[in-house]
Image (cartoon, rainbow, N blue to C red; front, side, top):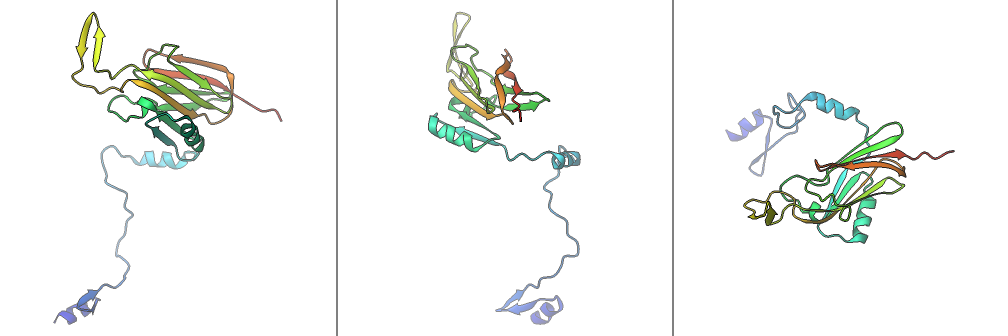
Length: 202
């Protein structure tokens, strides 16, 4: 009785187990993942028309080793490299998030640097002619005790970036006139910069 029911269903027995035959499905849809309230089809269409310049990369280096750092960042022209306390991956505001935009003659960038000292002795932003930006600084948050208003406070929760030195490096899309730069590191913890594009005469 078993073999006759298998034959009727289009399966043959092999070694006591039914052998499944390959047949085309009656209906097939590609898997698109779970649907949620935040997804929209218009976002997918916008991504299809976006210019593809290569995958962005974020490189986290727990300790600063100059040769390794420069070797890794040179491999990723569209990436961001973080070292020191910026790369610790702790909970709290993220240091080193970068936005880049361009106009006809300039590049604009802004970098999220919450809790970073704005003291000129501890902070620098270097711009190279090839468009590489190198930011060095130190975070001032994340300490275990805070001395403010003639009082000493012991931290009960620590969610901000730990204190320490860091570097952030990223690449602008093209060469720049690094002498033609204007920047502002505001009290909101955002570094903004505008640098002129460099055009080579033919």
